[in-house]
Image 1 (cartoon, rainbow, N blue to C red):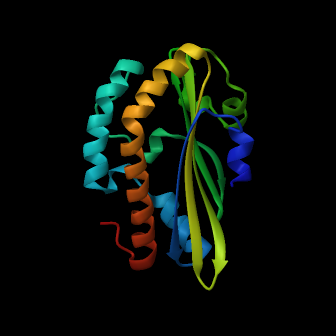
Image 2 (image 1 turned 90 degrees about the vertical axis):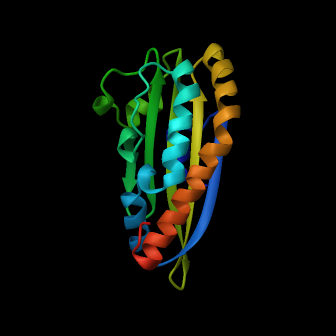
Image 3 (image 1 turned 180 degrees about the vertical axis):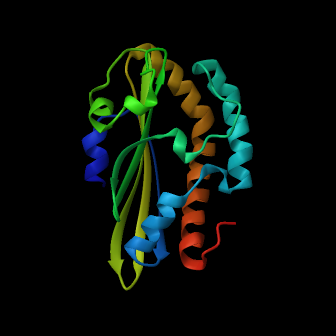
Length: 181
């Protein structure tokens, strides 16, 4: 469990968690985590296109381009063990993403929004083996948003999980072989 993630979003309604073990030092693995991109995988690009279909029904101003890691707000970056990015979406979300930091994210509670935290944390297992955990948590700020997001989550969760598993495989491959493909 990530203390850093718990400090940002201790309560949530939805969660997705995946893990892998990578051969390398924590510093090498963390560099691969920082270097990841959602567009590294063709399956991720296809799934992001499909994601936009239900997303446009629930979220204003969904972009037609594929989402990248930079679309998420940097919240915590403690090399070589914790990297957390987030997103606040909905009708009352902050207008300027750059103004959102960990404190504002933690305190934000405007109705009609979701708060999403996407964490990676590393555990040094010794002998150049590092466990990488990734967890996504979502909190809805009111009951109406929760009802809508529940339907969205049922549709997107399996595909979102697949993207995360592919990202972990990419991090492992990048660290162990130097290849992103």
